[in-house]
Image 1 (tube, protein in one colour):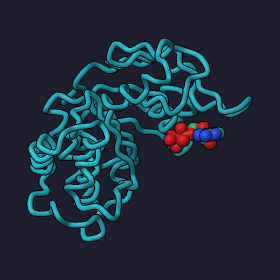
Image 2 (tube, helix red, strand yellow; image 1 turned 45 degrees about the vertical axis):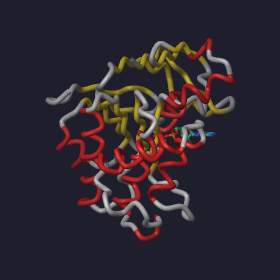
Image 3 (cartoon, protein in one colour; image 1 turned 90 degrees about the vertical axis):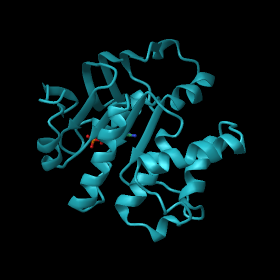
Image 4 (cartoon, helix red, strand yellow; image 1 turned 60 degrees about the vertical axis):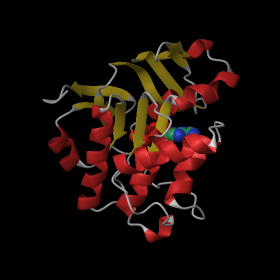
Length: 224
Ligand code: ADP
């Protein structure tokens, strides 16, 4: 569960990015966050990943009260929250397999476990046969699916996707969204920001609109 209670974020004295935002997102929901550029969407996501701290208000994610979170506990929190971005952020000199394996190496998983786990997520995102390709040998949609595989390989409870289709043509964008839906069906909460109205219409999920740092609309989707 994600809970925000009157969360305000100011950058410096003036820059009010979020203004008393209250939200409740249930486990396993698929939520779209929309709003014009500068509305506060990325700030909201950064507060959840603890890249930023709120100026005031309460945040509780998966039972963790962020007011009580110690800095040394943040890495553990981030393992429960997978992230993907518009610019895939893959390691260019590593293959698909190695990019995904890296997420497991850094948490100390054994080679045997890695060899067992990575093929499962490669299969999940539909990249069988591309294991030994380098990112530059893949389409944008395939690169984003590697980034998704890397984000979910540690089985996070929540997947945060900040404009994941922003760099993709409509066909690849939809491939990526389909993979996110599949991951959601496996029980992961998905929060996704998007500017793509077609995706919003087609997905029929809950849509939260942020406008000038406030939630201006929160509409349940038919599939929510
Ligand atoms: P969105 O993701 O909806 O485009 P952001 O959350 O990035 O919006 O930004 C919300 C507001 O906060 C904007 O006015 C932006 O300029 C400001 N802002 C975002 N990040 C910073 C920062 N690190 N320092 C100062 N102002 C920021």
